Image 1 (cartoon, rainbow, N blue to C red):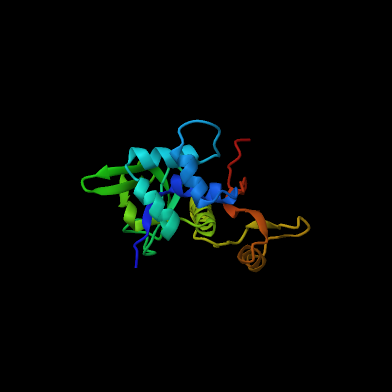
Image 2 (cartoon, one colour):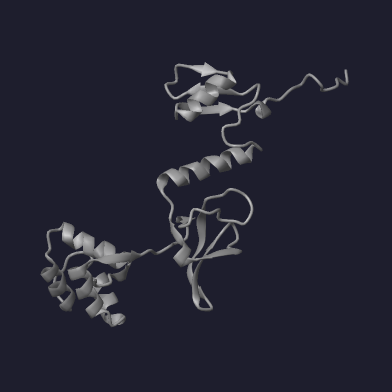
Amino acid sequence: MTEKVKLPQAVAEAITSMRDSEISDFGIVAFVSRWNGAEPDGAKVIRDWSFQNDSAGKLLSALVNGYEVDPEYKVGDWVARIDGKNIYPKGEIKVVEVFAGIERLGKREMVRHGTDGEWGIPVAQLRHATPKEIKAEQERRVWAGIGREVGEFRDGDFGEHVSGREQSESQEYLSDWYKRGRLKGFYPAESFISFEEVESNA
């Protein structure tokens, strides 16, 4: 069985774009082989990769036998570990934003992450996080920002249903709305300012 070649993400996207424009694989090769004249989006990307990396043979193999995408990670992308393990040795964080793009450290390509780029994970162990995973991590950060676990409602919290027609301070209601994705937001009890214990100087 012929092993599929790995293409950079930008090259793979360029091939998909040209195919979506109903350009045949023969047409892709023809456009990539030309050096002037009008050409579809993506042709230059494929050409630069093919000739700069002496990868013309890989391009032909990719078009005929299929290919795999060698993902690229840019600053601001969200990543997760392929094995499903936590990003850091401690804690339960599953996804994190890329602090710095791919860089080579010794013999391995690494992706820096974290707020200061102190941590790094080998590219081979990463994948792009799904929208669902990203949303979950963003919500975890919101909860952590008020010192709570995800979904931890307390006495005194006051929330609003996404319909805008219902409001409640019931922990049961708030928890149910949150689990079903029907909670627009809530005012934490911690945001309440009490003047009861303020001593009067009068």
